[in-house]
Length: 402
Image 1 (cartoon, rainbow, N blue to C red):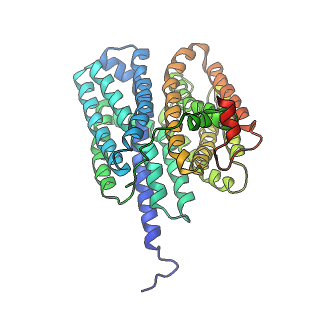
Image 2: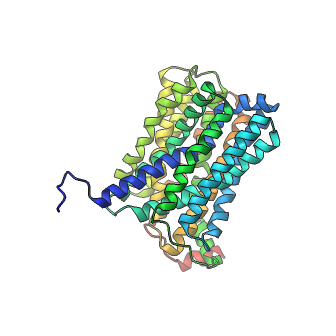
Image 3: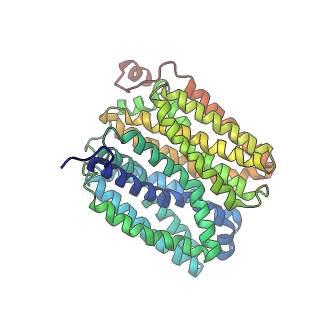
C-alpha cells in the first residue's frame, strides 16, 4: 500500500509524536524554575520566612540543576541516556511530591531540601532531550523539531508562572507541586518505552587541551560569557516585574507573552541564511530593547510590548546557541553541551537574588542594568571575525591557552 502525499509517513508521525511529548515535558520540567516566582510571598507566609529568604529557593533550584548537569553527564558514561532521562523525570516527580508534603506540614528546611532535589533531578531533561530529539527525528523534520522544543523551553517561563498562579488561586500552593508530580509519572513511563537515547558517552577523561579549546577567548570563551547571562536575564526580568506594582494582572501579562517564543521558528529560518553569531546578537539586542521599554513604561500596552520584545529576543537567540553546539564534532559536542547547560543554569541561579538586591533601585534602573548586560553580551558575540562553523582542533589556540 502506498501513502498519499496528504497522509503523514510513519517517520513523520514518529517525529511529531516524540516532539510533542518532549514539549509537554519541557513545560512541566523547566517550568519548575519559574513557577516558584509568583508563589514566593504565599510560601514565605506559610513557612514563616522573609521574602528574601524564600527567594533563595529559586537560587537553590537553579544551582543544584547546574550541578546536576555535571552529575548526569558523568553517569551517562555508564548508563544509557534513555535510562537516565526516565530516572531523572521519575526522580523529579518524587521530589515534587516531597516538596508539596513539606510545604503542607510547614517544614521550611524540608521545602528547601525538596527544591534542591527538584533542581538536581530536573537536570536530566535538557541535554538528553536534545540528544533524543536528534535521534528520533529525520533530517527533514529536525530543524522544525528543534525550533518547537526551543519554543517549549522558553514558553515554560510565562506558562510555568501562569499555571502555578492559577493552580494556587484555585486550590493551594502545595497542589502546584503535587500536580506536577502526578503529571510527570506517565511521561516518565512513555520516555522509558521510546527506543531512542540508547547511546552512552565515551568513557574518556577530557584532555586539558580540549577543555582549554572550549574555554579559550578566541574560540568559545565569549560564547560562554553570553550563555551565562542568557537565562539569568529572563529570571531577573520576571522577578523584577512580579515584585513591582506596574502590572495589575500578572496572569494576563504572562499569558500575552507566550506567543513571543514562536520567534524560535524565525530563528530557524534565519540560521540557514545568515551567520550564527548575527542571529545571537540580534536576539540579545532585541531582548535589551524590550527590557529598556519595560523599565521606562510604567504600565499599559508599552509594558506588554516590552515583555514581548524581551522574551522574543531570547527566543530568537536560543536556537542559534543550540545550533552552533549541534554542529560540533562528536568529540567536542557532548562536552560543549554539558558545559553550556552548566553555565546556563549557574547564571539562572543568580537571577532572583540579583533582582531582590536591585529592586530598591527602582524598576527602571534595574531593567536598564539588565539591558546593558545583554548589550555587552551581544557585542562580545558580534566581535568574532570568523564564527567557526565547526570547531576543529587548532594548535595555535592550544599554544596560546597554555
